[in-house]
Image (cartoon, rainbow, N blue to C red; front, top):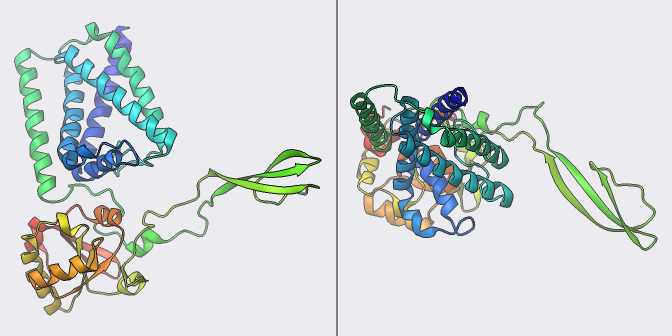
Length: 364
């Protein structure tokens, strides 16, 4: 049992630290995932939605700290109980998402590792087994250092996590795992390779044969049956290739201008996914930065999911000299974790990306 506890301690500790640090690198992204869970169509806990970012920061820091406390063997009773409660909650959440097909990606490892709902649930079940080993064998979890050193390690880790969270929220994630990272080409991200796997479907055909229902399953071919056709049920049994970027548009009055605008050699995008939630003071800087970009020969456009009326009010209020185009809110949230944020592109390749606190660092 002692050795099993040691193996579990190392496995769980390291996994919690890695998972926590990946999400701590992008707590805003994890908060968007929590908002999805809190929505009426999932858990219907909408009263938590305004607190999504605060909950996100608390959860990811807790993951890292609990992983560290487990590895150094500090406060084992508190640590193991906390881990057990956390993993039980996560296991319920991932099972609910998988069974009811509510949230297609749990966000367990942020954008670094994408897991299907059932993969997320399986991962949590395995983790739960290891945590139960720790729970029943917690007497074998002994401190690695003296109490004083353990307090120092825990305190330093907590302070480092808080400082890091503050830094990425005030700027942008230190490591960008998304398909819109600097250097990525949007057109290439939307393309599908010729040899990419195609989806495989199963068709369950129902016929009435001699007064009785008969079901024949094929992978597409219409079956040769001497009977009356009733209906067919289609099931995807193997997903096909989905490009990293599959929902990017630049729309205005129902027309998509993405293909045209992504060919611009000098293009600046001002991203404001929800103007009602934007930092309005930042638009004073947006006006200055975009005016400079236009003087240098750049085409400037805005990108938002808000209404055109809201966009017009914003343009008038801050003297913005560019038009807004519209696309999906989730896409804009994925592009840049800032509201507003700015991208500088060359023929669809992202050359610069800036949080509104760093607009002065943009070069044209």
